[in-house]
Amino acid sequence: MADSKIPFIDIDIADDHKAREFVRQINHGNESVPTIIFPDGNILVEPQNSILAEKLTQMKTILTD
Image (cartoon, rainbow, N blue to C red):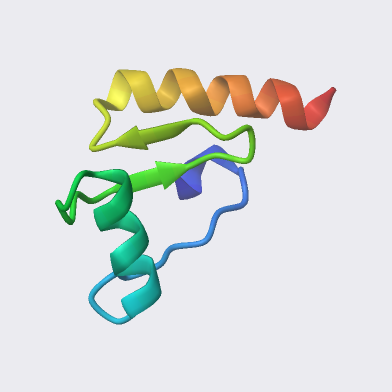
């Protein structure tokens, strides 16, 4: 994601209890990573590269408009 030039925050759920609980809640008790939460409310869990690339392209369009 760093290559996308879109700002993001990388949170390690091993070090952040609240983040770990949040990821578990979203993923029905699983600690699935990456769990990516976008400003528009969409969430991707362990996305394929092509799906993530498509979403990042959408976010670039939103951020540059």
